[in-house]
Every structure is written in C-alpha cells, then in structure tokens.
Image 1 (cartoon, rainbow, N blue to C red):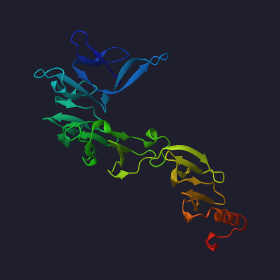
Image 2 (image 1 turned 45 degrees about the vertical axis):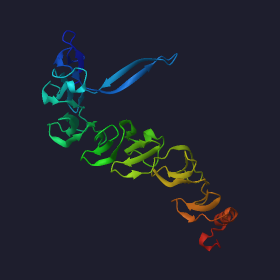
Image 3 (image 1 turned 180 degrees about the vertical axis):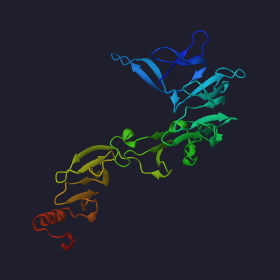
Image 4 (image 1 turned 30 degrees about the horizontal axis):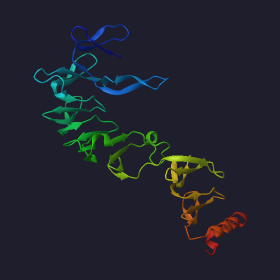
Length: 317
C-alpha cells in the first residue's frame, strides 16, 4: 500500500492518507515525518537560472517510517528539541518516540541518538552497534559514515562495527561509491565493486569494503578493438599509459603501464616503455622482457616468427 503524507491546516501536524481516495490512513499528530533522501534542482531552460529545489522522501523504508514530535522541554529549532520513533503502515508506533535524533531504516538498521551518543538499532529496538559516536548516518551497501569525536574524526564502519576507514576525515571528504564504474567512467579495475574514496588535503585514498587500501580506479579515456583478436581491447588510461582488456572475460589482461602497445600479430604484440621494447602474448606475459634499444631486432624477429614460425627461444637476444 502506498501512502502520501499531508499536513493538517488547523493543527500543523503531519499524517498519511491514501493518494487515490484521499482517505486518512494515519492521523496527523506528528511534527516530523521522514527525512529527505535527496533533492532535485530545476532550471529555466532559456537562461539556466535555478527556479526550484524539491526535496525527495522515502518514508516507509523497510516498512517503518521515522516520525518525530516536539520536545517541549527544549528549544524548537534544534534537532534535540524533538523525540523520534518509528511507525508502520498501520500507524502503530513500533518503536517509541524516545530518541533524540534518528535516521531512516536502511538495510534493517537505523542510527539513533540516546544519552548524547549515536548507535545502531534493528527493527526490534535492539542495540546492534554500541552508542559511542558523536554523529552517524544510515547504512548503505553495508557501510556507514560515523563520527567519533569532532568534525575531523569521521570514518566508515561496516555492519559488524569494524572500522573500514580510519576516523581522521571530515564528513564531506568521504564518498561511498556503490558502483565504481558509475563514478569513474569505464572503470575496468573494479567493475561493479563498492569502494570508499577518502580525500584529505591533496591526498586521495581508496579503500575496499574489507578496509584494505587499494589502487585508484582506472579512468579509461580511449579504447579500440584489436585487429587480430576482437575479444581484446586496447585501452588508454588518463595518465597516458596503455593496457589490454578482455571484453569477453570482463577483466584487465595488462594494466595500463606501457607508452604504446601495437596490435597483435600471430598472438604477439610489441610494447614500448621509455624507449625500450619488449613482446607480450595474449595473456599479458612478457615473453620478451623490455631490453634496451631492440626495436629493430624485434621487428626482424616478428617477421621470422610470422613467416617461418621460429620460436623466440632460438633467437640470440
């Protein structure tokens, strides 16, 4: 059943009703219902001027909706002036309005504040992560940003409470990338994986969901299919280096580390790095390592390999 919120014009309280019939499903008695998930910005097409900002809500997350009432003992315009709890689609208060702050339920957990600290609870109200944080956000992709002390002590934890990213960042320095390919176009190093981007001053670090620091995602700005083998794609990263990607197996064969990779001929391709040349096969193995100044010899070797099927081990270099 889908419900929409509405505001009682007389009391100023919020409730829910059937959007088709207008019938009231949950009486308007709350000062807050839900928290905005995101927002949309609308612009004038003619002059690109911003004309509207619209907040977007997801009220009944996992069947429960965050609701709040004013705590008359405190000032109205502070978060702590409300008491929060959760209701279901029938209006039943599943979790009483006893928390000083709260997020929506996400992945069956919610961050709530009690006794001046944040922790995480499940839908029964059971404490899953102890109340030890000065601030916290809800879980997403099994990860949640939490603050240990001040604004410079944000980090990331998983559902077990394990620290994934150390508590040494500001809130906006941490970004959870649900699918790295969406954020780093045509990323081939971590396709579909969840990474955390942590930025501090001029240093950017990346962590996987195990808390291991990993190499930055690869931004591919140019690619073309190999003439001999259409399953292989020559890729160039933004740093200008070339590699090879297997389009069928969906994996990188050669990381972008060469100045140039020629097309394959008879299963072999010449590579160049810093004016030195070598040869790789279709697995990425350097069957001839990068020696100094052997470009012409490799051209001669390639001709022999193609026309006479000479094994490279028989050659003098």
